[in-house]
Image (cartoon, rainbow, N blue to C red; front, side, top):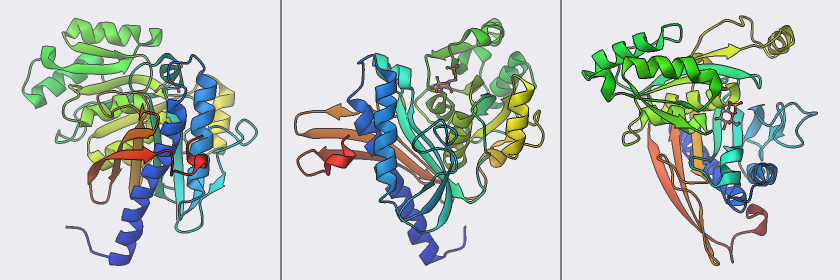
Length: 330
Ligand code: VTB
């Protein structure tokens, strides 16, 4: 049982719910662009709405995972100070995880945010990260990034007391995963190939009902940190290794504090201490319903969770466009 500190609990709890407002705002704004073939406008709308929503949250936040460096991104750039003032926290954002999916009206696009105490997040550069994740209740270290796919599947099947053929692997549908996919298929496992959206893909390992047993493969490193924050709250194991393509990327990462470029990061090194995570569905998927719009308003579906308590909440928001400030509707 954790120690009880009423004052800090109130701050924590309220903050977690505030985060949902932020992801709702981004999702509502992005939802106007679903299926319209314009991923940049969808992303821009989400970023803009999320940035405005942060102005009303009582934190002294620093963006550590954001839309890019200060000279690349006008808003939510790395190092930007956000919030109304309050506890010093670090913020990781992906206002629209799945810009292409949104543009095509495909599944699983989300607006997402995570929050940690100062210094809690790995400052992941915008490169690929190799990732592996499994759900809660399994022996620590059961699967490993350096093990072959068939070895990890064998261990997982043994621990889950099932056949490899019962396991579902989730990964991004990319050419770079061809060998890994072939190895999983050869071992007899089933595979769910995602067009995009590996934050939701990783979280799926820890959610009953998605049918996903293990996530493997590479995707964005910032997305890896967001997924790690979520798994810290909901339970599960994850490892990540940054994938550098050249020396320049290595030296830029050094400046961001990455000392060992080959390091395999544990979930606790990617998201340390108390963390919170929130996401709102933009388009529907196994984790969240998408935004549903009508003339009068819109319905949103969000998940919010805290590592401290382990509570996972699903929040359905009914938004009345006649009363909601226009700034949040973008
Ligand atoms: C993933 C996915 C994202 O980037 O991280 C992916 O979750 C990785 O890059 O939705 P590639 O598309 O080059 O494989 C996204 O697709 C876009 O940020």
